[in-house]
Image (cartoon, rainbow, N blue to C red; front, side, top):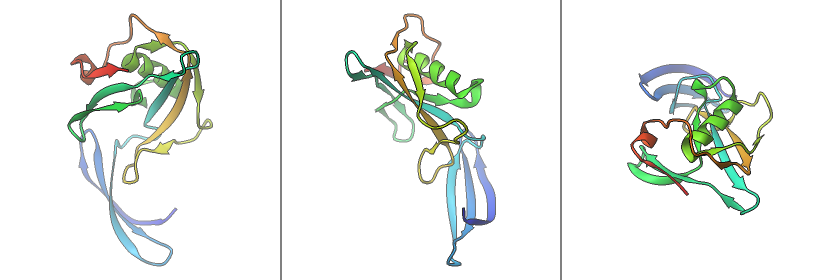
Length: 154
């Protein structure tokens, strides 16, 4: 870890922006900006749903706010509204990909804070492999992007 000399919250809404001044071991000081949810990690889950019989992966195509376009992604979702990280993975796979059951395998050890979402971000995710889930004819209600038919399952 590097020495943080100053840290200020610059903006807060759905995501927050922090200004951070960091001192490196060679004495150089650099100002950085970073973004994130502001919540304690892990922030979300990512699920890789793989069917061993068909040897296929289920992807979703959903609206991507950052580039204002539809993009293929893996099912994922925020941890903030679930009691455990596994419950989050099960629920988000059902909500976004309309899949249920299957064998969930956490790909990081228990207690790990997660993989950083991106270099400039504070959000971290826990990846899961889900083997042999099945289609759910009555999945959980989707968030806004799904309700407006902006999620497609592939």
